[in-house]
Image (cartoon, rainbow, N blue to C red; front, side, top):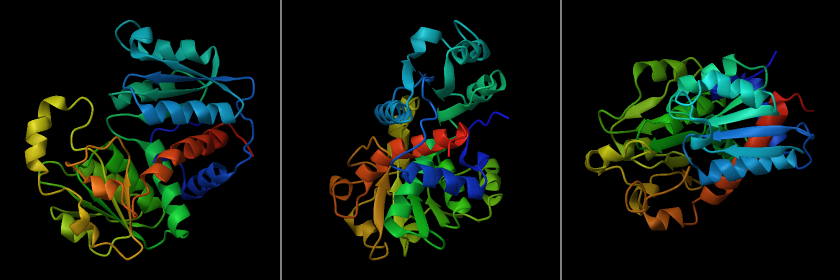
Length: 297
C-alpha cells in the first residue's frame, strides 16, 4: 500500500525513529535511482526547495521543481488531475500549498507517495528536522522540555505532535486569540502528552531545554501584520528570556527570521543558537523520510 506523509503522526512512534535513523545514514539506499520527484510549490521557500532537491539527488533521483503558474492548482486544472499527470513521470510527489485539503486530494488520486512540504495546517518535514537536531544535541529526548514562543501555527502544531511522539514536554506561550484550537489540542493529546498552554513566555521557558519560535506573520497573512505586531509585542525571545533555559538549553527557529520581532539578532547568532544545523537537517530529514516511504533499507 502506498504511504503518504501529511503530518508527523502518519508515522507510528517506531516508524518515526526509523525515519530519523535513515536520516542519519550517510550512505542511504538509492531508492529514487532512475526516477524523478515532482516538487510542486504554491508557496516559495529557499530551505524547502534546496533541501528537497538535494535529498532527491542523494537518493539517485532527479528533482523537478514546479512553479504555481505552471500548473494552476484548481484554476487551470484540478489538483487531482495535476497529481495524476505528475504520477505518470515521477516516483514521488511533494507539494507545498496553502490549503491542506489539496494535498489530501492529490494523494487520493495517485499511487505514488505524496509528501506534505507545508500546508496551512502542518509542516511535518520541519518537525522531523527539528527532532533530528534535538537528538543530535541531547541524545535521548524523553523528559526534555520544548518551549515554543509565538503563534500556534502549522510549525507549532507539527512540532507539538513530534514532541509528544518522542516523550518530550511541549509548552506553548501565545497571546489570546493566537493559541491552538480544540482540534489541534486533541490531536496532540492523542499522541500521549498533554501540552502546556500559557500566555506567559517566561513561564513557558523556565527550565526548558529548547526554546523555539517562528515569524509572527506568515506568508498569506500580510494584511494582519500590524495587528500581529501589537499582539505579540511581549513575546520576543531576547537574552533575558534565554536565561530561563536549562544551562545546556538551545535556541531554534525554522527560518526565515525577522530579527527584532520574534527574536533578537544576538539570540539568532548567539552560542545557544542551532538554526544552521537545524536548517541543514531539513535535507537529512527529507532524505530519511523518502527512504522510508519508498521502502529502502
